[in-house]
Length: 106
Image (tube, rainbow, N blue to C red; front, side, top):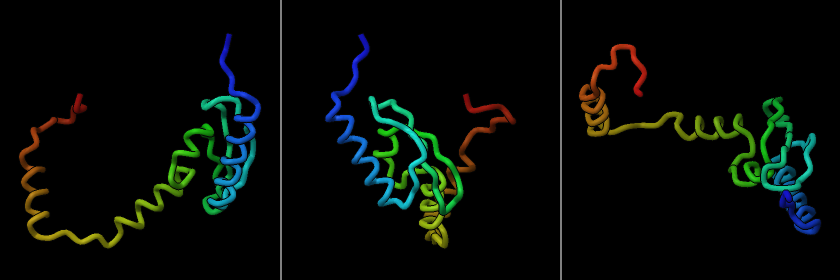
């Protein structure tokens, strides 16, 4: 027998997700919550993309969709400044790596 959530839990999880979708200014396309692996499709009007995920992954993510997440990371790393000490350490690490010769790291 396949385990499914109780109806009250399903309704509660759906409401939580719908509130998160509204807070993130995304648009709900389709999906019904039955368990944590239930499919959810959300439209991001800012980037014009449909995002297919699960209810659990949407709830756990900070931004809700990958395009918004990449934009957030990009904005945080833009105009980042490194000290000379950090640049020297990065350079030293890069030179100490073994040559791969075009082969994958595995």
